[in-house]
Image 1 (cartoon, rainbow, N blue to C red):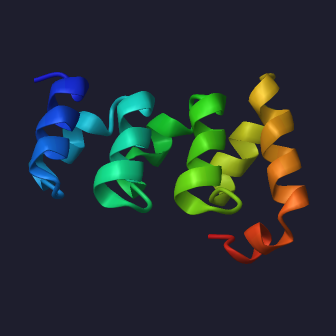
Image 2 (image 1 turned 120 degrees about the vertical axis):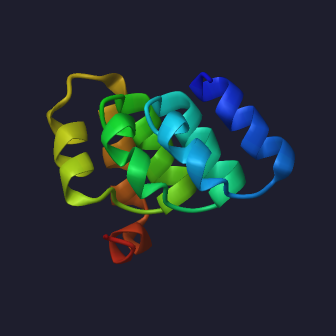
Length: 103
């Protein structure tokens, strides 16, 4: 089963299915959507995969965590050479309350 198939199965059931999480967590894109629409919160198992993609790290910070990323994700994001870094820094600096959500 692929990450997108696992996500679709979980989304259709509208519930957390632990055996599918190992599959979904390998893909940053599907992990972000799973966190947003199925878990409706942090998907800790997938954070290493999400952290490899600056764009999805930014979306994860903004729409899932609603604050600053966990330290290892934050550091990886800041060190990446991606335009999403600017958006992430603007988001956390314009939303001082997001710093209170530091994990």
